[in-house]
Length: 37
Image (tube, one colour):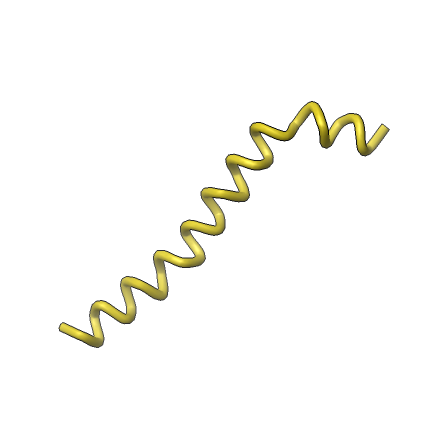
């Protein structure tokens, strides 16, 4: 059980980073467009 918990926790960290990155990209599109221009 402990080993399975470690695997699940290890998968949750990168998944959370991807979700936060996607949210930042969606919410920050106007700012990103201004930075590129």
